[in-house]
Amino acid sequence: MLYQKEYTVDPAHVDCHKILDDCYYDFYLDACRYSFLKDALGFDTVQEAGKGVMIVLAESYKRLLKPLGSNSKFAITCQAFHRGNVRIVFKQQILVGDAVHARSESIATCFLKGGGRLFIPSSLFQKLQPEPNFREVSMSERLLALLESGITDPEAINIAVQGLPTDLREQLKVLGSNLADI
Image (cartoon, rainbow, N blue to C red; front, side, top):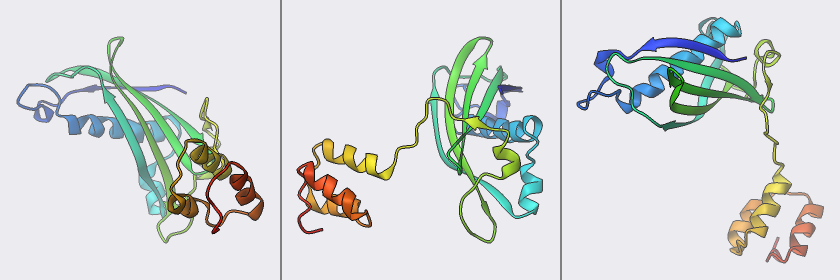
């Protein structure tokens, strides 16, 4: 589901060059994410917080392509997907007409106020599709990629393989790594 919301740059948000100050891109993107959650997915973060369900932004990446000027009218698009059972991936664009001025990808998750494991509430999870073209990489695959990359520092490898099953450690040894002391 693609959501879109219209905005106008607040003149108080521009810098000395008469363009939107960098920090306010995050402000508008964040506002759009919260509106999307409430308006399109029926997930009211204020009500959920009252129930002890907190949503937090874990990662965010944005790429600014063209600046927005004072009083610019623009739209922000937003889509959300789940990545596994604990990550909500937001993909957004800032548009002026058909021109893309910025792209963003953010990852959020939820937790209970009293602590516990990260999760996506079922009421939200059921409305999200899996992230397209994403494949969860297992710890085994990550370690094999690490070894195939040519890293030879025994200490780094030993730290990376702590807690792995014996059969996986044996596979790693076959790849020629220096794991004799594990």
